[in-house]
Length: 370
Ligand code: NAD
Ligand code: DAU
Image (cartoon, rainbow, N blue to C red; front, side, top):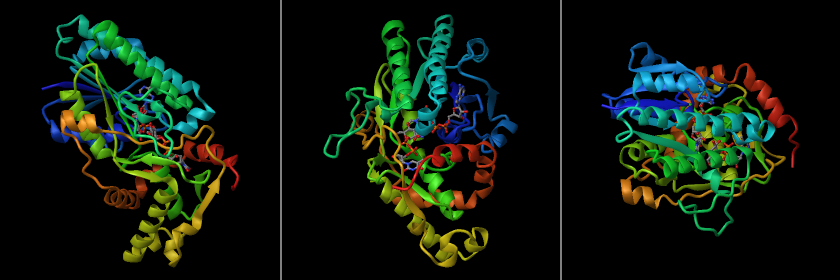
């Protein structure tokens, strides 16, 4: 039985990881520590908190006293560190929060874990997993080989720079203090509970509401889409069986440009509305409700500054050492994700009320058609 701390457990990947962990390792004791920023949502965890399957603490990873108290009281043997500011566009308009949480917060968490584990007998059996991103490696050209664990760091956005800094801190703690830590760098996740500021949920929700679908630049930018369930499986493998001090890349083996992703969302919605007449009554503003194509909503707008052109992950090390391979194909995963957002209007309506509207005005207000 492990005592597990999941930071950022109320975020998109965090919620999925909590459910996956609960199902795979029911004897472990799980605690979620989350500051409950705009990106957090506890709805899916509420039943687990209510029946005491998990414990939840609202708090900041940068609060050294709180974090140390939690380690001393709960004797964590595993830390899955996901708490972060995670949206590239927000890091462009307001980078400071990214430095505070992603750099200083990660430092505080590392320090507390190291001190607590050193002053107990846990240092020999504890493990700290730092969840990071492929964006630390920068941008690939069309013919470049995919990012491997030895690719140089070349972060381009404030978000990517803050994650790169946190990765370097983890490496330094391993080398200098024998911190029992590992790093994973993964590609773009998609699936249930993703915040509607990110490409796939944003486009689904805009389409069903009949709003424009704003593709940045010419839409040729490429991402390597990974279903969140495959990511969570890989995280659980690395934290248990990965080698301390190592980095593991996690990817979907599925490169798609943004034009194709948005086009696939539109076509899938058209088919869903054609198959299920009840959708037209629920989402009357969607073009598909009147038999028109959702693609008619697509528009090209001012590009993201410093927009990385292409990400691709070489996940051979993960497969060779730990046996993890992706099991969810993109077509199936996207269909399932679209179905989830159609069925969980209650969830995204709650998330897109309040501050979300101000964000949409801020990020898309200055963009013009190109
Ligand atoms: P998210 O934005 O959905 O969730 C982040 C969570 O962290 C939120 O619940 C938020 O409240 C919490 N948080 C933020 N600041 C905090 C603080 N100071 N203290 C405690 N909690 C805090 O992010 P996500 O998409 O679930 O990403 C999780 C992790 O995975 C991040 O570290 C991100 O960099 C990394 N990652 C994400 C992706 C992706 O495609 N989503 C890909 C690669 C890596
Ligand atoms: O690669 C991993 C990273 O993937 C994670 O580290 C980040 O936390 C996560 O947010 C994601 O970053 P991206 O910037 O790639 O994701 P986003 O969903 O914001 O954008 C995906 C692509 O779609 C990107 O090329 C920008 C484009 N885009 C995005 C939005 C929100 C648009 O064209 N229009 C949009 O409105």
